[in-house]
Image (cartoon, rainbow, N blue to C red; front, side, top):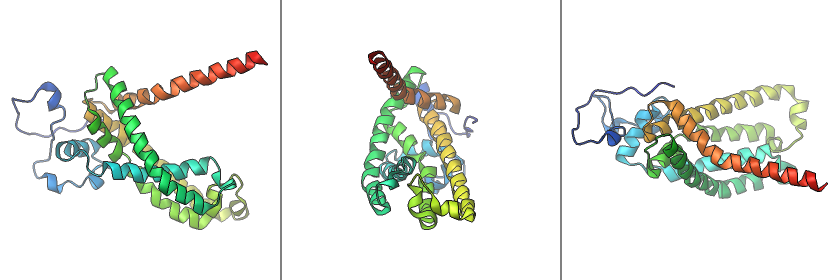
Length: 241
């Protein structure tokens, strides 16, 4: 993950060192109207988030978070084998209704945590720009959402159940199953890559690795207390038996 390329532009003597980190940079032949963030975010995430924060940092942020929340809700239902007790239409309906709320909560809480943990390592981004980075990094995850259509058409309720008799009886079904799964993994990894790069940009970090550290620290704020709590409860149960 290399730092973003900087393009030649006139120097602004009124910019502070901090604000210059966030000054939009465009190619000479490019204007704000020519930049399509849905396309450029895939391969030019830093430049894309600079353009977004300079023009409209709230562009589609809520919409992206809501759509991604639906996909996350379906993924959790699949991992937890919810289909063992709940029909597929109910699972999909709940995901469409509750998923957007979960996406917004994740965006709200995550922006607070990333801003807090980023301040420990020199981050200068504000919550509005961090939410921009978080939401637009979700584009690959949103691109994976339509993959649920062939999955449900081919595998039906087995996408949400522990037992998979149809897959077990038809080995050829494993080819599309594994193929779609591989595409989902690639998109999931790219989601993380974009998040690290875009968080690094809005936080003023030159290295995307510091963006990764920022995200990991934010997750640790939640996970470490939970792990400690589980250990304490387990020890308490062990001492009482």
